[in-house]
Structure formats: structure tokens, C-alpha cells
Image (tube, rainbow, N blue to C red; front, side, top):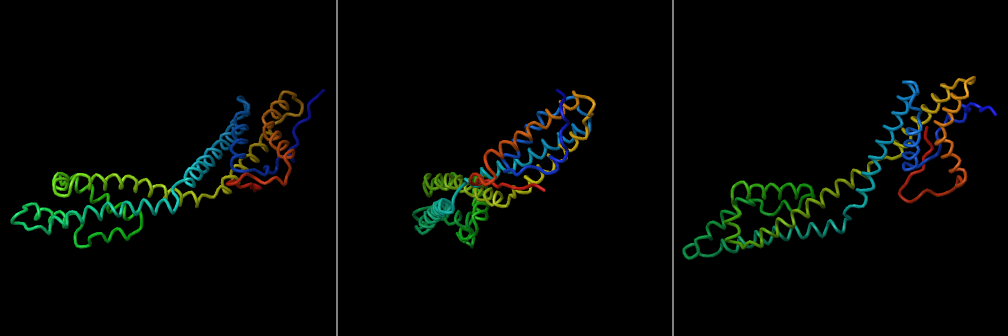
Length: 255
């Protein structure tokens, strides 16, 4: 029994798919591309794989970032960070109020307050989270570069600066999480789904155009190359066109 060549009209539109489904389909089509295919067809298959790579990167960023720190959690981290800086500054200020004649480090305590916080004091703690972290990080770098830790630990007590450093590390992770979340919220997966859809249609069209209708091996090769797309459509039809996609996904009709 002879094989019928694939009908090109069946492949002029990409299937309705989510980002996850599109990535899976693209990977399967790329793997099914004949190794001895023409240069043009291999190039088109590579384009499918590249579209899947970009979609997967965007999807991974979105999934990872959307699970990051919540607003409530960020607020708690911010409060802990603010308190750590306030405690250190108040400790140094309290020591600076001691009589210098009796407590020589009182003068050094006053100097440290000026060096670390300047005339603006803790006003930086009212800024946005990223600005707060950047300012605090600059202060800590100055402490390290100018060798101020020894004096701070001696005057204020080691636990105060240790607490600042510990809270600062948590603060940095919180800020990074918020920035990633904001980036993820701006990721439009629909654009990637459409890009995969266009690449799939282009590839399928070239597969159909490569068929020699008088050569059964050519027909078989084309059908094998398109089998993942046929199987995807058949599975989608079985599930039903009205099935609601999983939460967090977008089902798109590609261009």
C-alpha cells in the first residue's frame, strides 16, 4: 500500500498551545528532523529549537521569580535591616555621650558615627529597598576597606556589627527576589508562543515542499518528520478544545 504525501494545507497554522506545550512540541520536531535533510530544512529545524530555547528561558525566569519573596516577607526583612543599623548607631551615639576624660573611646565613637552615617544619619532607610541595600553595602565596604571593624567591635560590641552583616545578607536576597519578580511580571510568554508557532509552520511547510511524490522513502521521511505535530494535534483533540489550561499558563493561538 502506497503512502500518501502529507497535505500542506493541514500545516498552514500552528496548533493552539501553551508555552510548555510549545516547547515540548518544538523539541520533538527538532529531534524528528531527518539527519540527511536539506540545508534549508535543517536551518528551519534549528530555528524551531532556538525559539524553544528562548521560550524556555523566559518561562524559567517567570516561574522562579514569581515564587520569590512576598510583600509581607519583604517588609519583615526591611524592618530587621533597619533595626540592625539603628541599634549600631544608637550604641555608638550612647558611647559618644560618655565623658571623654574618663572614657577615651568616646571621641572615637563620635568619629565613627560621622564616618559611617554622616550628617544624614539613617535617612537612607526611608529610601526604596534597592537604594537602602546599595547605601548599606557602601557603608559596609568602607568599614572593611578602612579597617573600622576592630574599633566598632571594641566600642559597640561585636554582636552589633555581626547583626548588621547578617541582616544585610538577607536584605540583598530580598532585593534580588523583588527585582526578579518585577522582571518576571513583564515577561510576555504569548510572544514566545507565537514565535514558536511561526517557526513550526515554516518548518512544516518546508517539509511538505521537500516531498517527492514519486518516491515513497521521501514521503515516509516527511511523515516521520511531521509525526510529532500530528500527534500533538490528535492529543489536543482528544482532550477537548474547551479544556482550561493549568494555572499560570497561557493557551495561545499562534499567528
